[in-house]
Length: 366
Image (tube, rainbow, N blue to C red; front, side, top):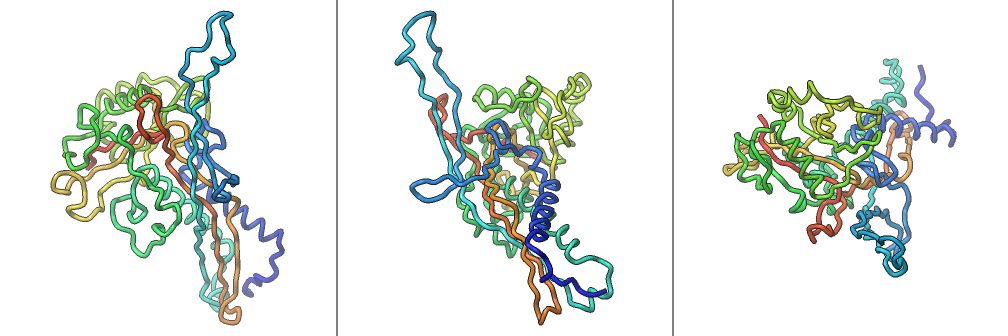
């Protein structure tokens, strides 16, 4: 078996490999089921650059609900129009890339593994996983210097991405903690092992989101929020008798929307999704966890509504191949132009700057 002659790839063949890699990555991405092009999506995809005074940028538009009461009867309409409160946020973009290389001609002779095919599979999974990580870090307001288990990243370039400086901690009106019996403004230094998640946390979070005018997503004429929870959070909630009763009496989910797929259960308008990438402190250094002594394991549950996150998705990944050591070794590199941003707006209800479409809820986990 001879080594692959990468020089024989035509432009069309290269395009096929690019598309296949991105398709495989999107299929593997947890966040992909929540991505959409409109302002009704949980994660809004922005695919075009907008010309601004500062050059071409990815602009995410946010339009608040109307608050006026309109005009009654035949009263004068002109001059009574309400100006739409439109906001915009800029998603900074950067290039994220990675590559693989084989051991050489002899290694290729000794294996039946197709290097290009395996390279595509590995790079697609890498890209999917890193997009998921960046999305969860951004939504949680956690610096890219950290992993989602609270540990520091080692030899990572995440913090060098241009949009890493745009990571924002949860805004005051969107930052809560569950005390085991009620929601309070979050202070992770006060969290103890008594702050165990329960069914009441779900009920109160939904009520809080609605009363603070966070826009839900709609499906089949109904309104829903998505709740991203750590597996240990879901395990604790499942032990609550109130949750068990709620599940047995829960209605059907409704239409087969993509963001229902993989949902553990839909109850009280919340579609629960468990995932290991929900931020937690289980592997944070001693003294850097939560609680007064920094020794309490906690997690940041996310309630997501419409436009909780902006995702700049500019084209398919670039696929490049190169020979090394007189073409005795072959390498593949993939790079993707992207960006993530948790949008904020000026709330007309609280007169404060707030995260637009999500609520963070901190609590204890085992």
